[in-house]
Amino acid sequence: MSNCARSFIDYYKASFKIEEDPEKPCQLFEEVYSDFICYTPITLELLEVYLNAGHIDYFYISLADLKYLIEFSDDLNRYWHLLRAYSGALSKLKSNQTVKSSKKIYYYYFTRYGDRRFLRNEHWFEGKRWEFLDELQSIYTEDSLENFIFKYQCILAESLKIYVSILSEFINDLKTIHPPSSVLVNDLN
Image (cartoon, rainbow, N blue to C red):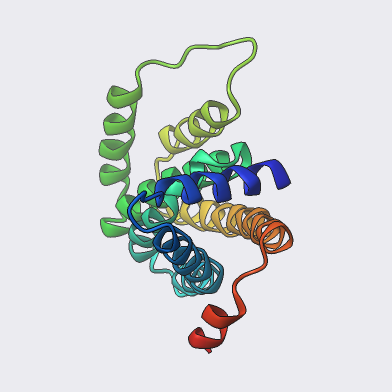
């Protein structure tokens, strides 16, 4: 994961290069970096609160704030997409929790992603998507829909825990490679 942290630091340092004022890029980088170190754990806590309160729609919307991190780690990419997909579908299911609505949602995703194709080395995320859709297709009662939603909220919660652990490791690697500026960290406290 330290290579991912190094690419994050290098990317943002390069993004702020300004030739006219050599001190300005360092200051901008340190501000963005310190904000990331400080506010990302708060964003993760907020996601957990939304999920625990059953506000999947807020979870889905807030998760977008972390999308830019998918560029820096395969694991962050994989779990961000899984969280986004499950929370988007569950949000739609919870907004109109009927079997008829679940069939419409299944049809929406089925037409969007095409017919199921069995692949020998199917991508992990594709397998998760089709597992979800296959189960959604087999729902015919309100009770089974409620159980389905509960099951996938639990899976979403477990996936969030994994995502949080990956992102926490990423942040710790960042702090090891480039400790936050003490001046800026003190300003935040």
